[in-house]
Amino acid sequence: MSHSYKKHAIIGITTAKSEKKDKRIVNRQVRHKVNQALKNPDKFNENALYLDKKDISNIWDFAKDGKQRIDKNSKFFKKTLRK
Image (cartoon, rainbow, N blue to C red; front, side):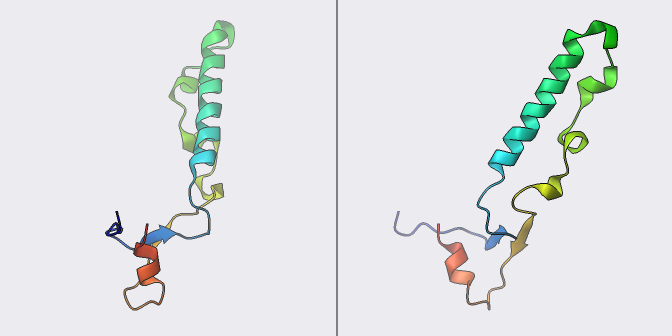
């Protein structure tokens, strides 16, 4: 794998490598709210079954805050292509 490189020079805006932890927390909250709605038929709200990540949290609070493309003339271009 000595010739293993990324095809595109796209990295996260901050130094965080992943948003996996944030996504797991939000998905856990969504599942919990849906299960609570199903277990309580007297307080049943049909809208609770169609919850989305955006309803629970703000995606801009996640670790990476999006992605950015590195310019070919940048001194960090070769470094970002390495795996």
